Length: 90
Image 1 (cartoon, helix red, strand yellow):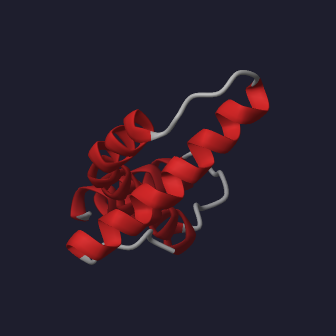
Image 2: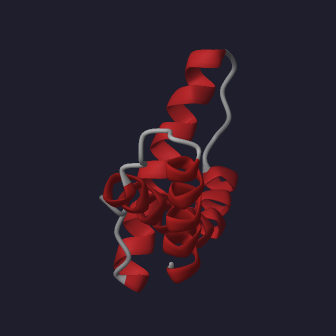
């Protein structure tokens, strides 16, 4: 995360040199932290989701596929939490 902060301060210096308004570094840094935490969570969830989707019966139609995917994600998130204690980042 240090490199992210350094990149933001570098970009801010360039903006200030060009007489542009400064970046909101705390907001952008927080957004980047949340994005990276979600990427880690999604990577951990992926094997659980794939296994759960494989176990779910398939249906025809877009609604059935959407419902299947939603239910599989709920089950996968619960399994991930029970087995590793990892919850979806806020």
